[in-house]
Length: 131
Image (cartoon, rainbow, N blue to C red; front, side):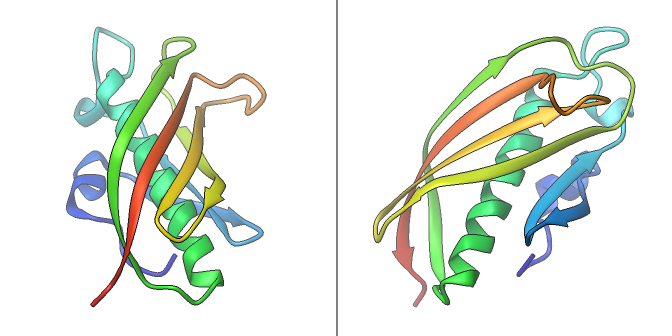
């Protein structure tokens, strides 16, 4: 990843687990910081993890292309598939389009079985050149 995680990600305990072909896989461990109803993750924490994974994937793509851009999220849609439980949670973003002005990125979060996501997200971001 080209830059350290922002303070929000650090506050949730988000860290880099590994990468797949350069695309970062992020995670956080269950703690009071991400707890929702008893025994389950808070939806906002899951959303935050997926947002950070989506941005990390987009940063990777832009770095690969040698482009430095400011990112401005425009729209985020989250679907909660099942409750996240008291265990490590992973997330990965996939860039579906990165044009000159707009990027579309999907993200998924999972726990013990990657084929059974606990949440999915789609983000649209405006891109503008860094000055």
